[in-house]
Amino acid sequence: MNITSKYVLTIIVPIYNEEENMQALEEKLSAYLEHAIVPSCVLFVNDGSSDGSLDKIAGMCKRHSDFFYCSLARNGGLSAALKAGIDETSSRLVGYIDADLQTNPEDFNLLLPFADQYQLVMGIRANRKDSLFKKAQSKIANGFRRMMTHDHATDTGCPLKVMHTSYAKRIPFFTGMHRFLPAMIQLQQGKVKEMPVRHYPRVAGVSKYHLWNRLVSPLIDCFAYCWMKSRYINYEIDKTNLQDNNG
Image 1 (cartoon, rainbow, N blue to C red):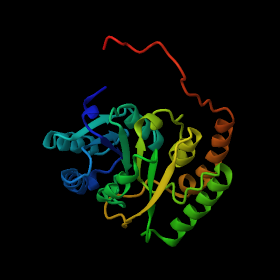
Image 2: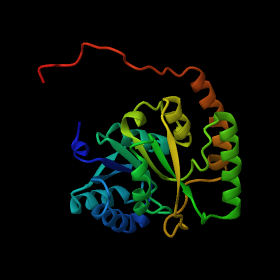
Image 3: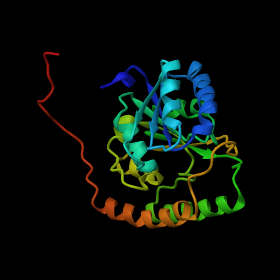
Image 4: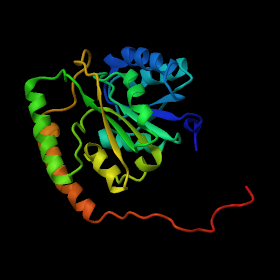
């Protein structure tokens, strides 16, 4: 257990060379925490940034008592950063948002009312503000993923999600697994809910995604998921005498 156990929701924000976005992140996230509908904190995960991101993260955490961070020794990618954040989270719920602010942290308040009934509540990017080429790549990748996984998810690439931490911690993460969160929750007999959320164009920094990791890599990862699914172990404890009845 750590300090995040005092909150209901921990919002994970993976950071990789987002120095130009840090001021906007601080403003948007701190504003949201003031009227989040459940007690919430922010956990920045520095994914081995080579710019000044880590210094700016540390500064933000000094200025805001509900901001925390951990820093990876080297760049591991989005799935690694998410796993690190989930591993460090002790609150009942764990959320996720990208540092590019193409989604709005205020929209966590649209997802949270459903978090009691659903183990994953995820956004769908309404009126998506990306290029036609980028949207076409995502459409192809999403369609292929749905065919392979039968997860029925509309937009797994939307970087706005709320999960039950207990379910998130049981996800067997590997590179690219962040694309399969709905399928991995469903493997645990969890329920998934989708909600439309706002989407904005990127205004600072540069995208870390290109044709390979937006289209080709996700298609390859589908086969890795199917292999893992065929060997996935899912169990439920029926009885135990491990409980300490003395408190």
